[in-house]
Image 1 (tube, rainbow, N blue to C red):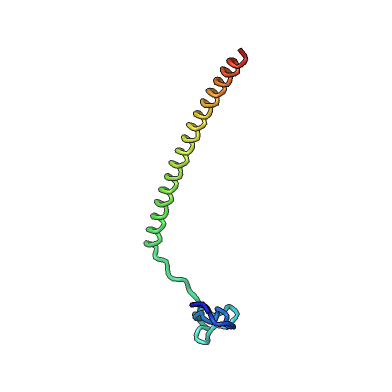
Image 2: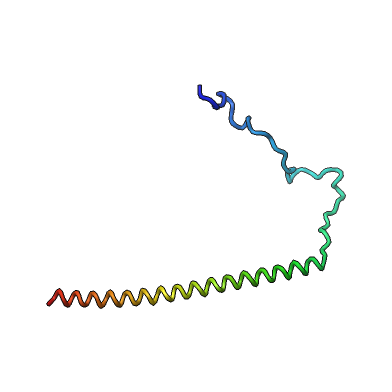
Length: 104
């Protein structure tokens, strides 16, 4: 017999603790909630303005960071392309020299 093994015939679900959850959607509402009308909370115009302003500043900052990243990526790709082209030209010249030396 091993330590920590569950007894035979007992599924592991019996060791789980049950947790309370939400009421299923198809169950009717409670008697005290039948006449209740859900009203959304009131919107404070000053708070909405401040939130909108902060969100606008946040989006502007994120767009600026994305733009800088894109510019840096394009510069890097351009440099890499120029270096790759230069390397290809050097390889082609070296290949021509070796072929000329080999045929002579």
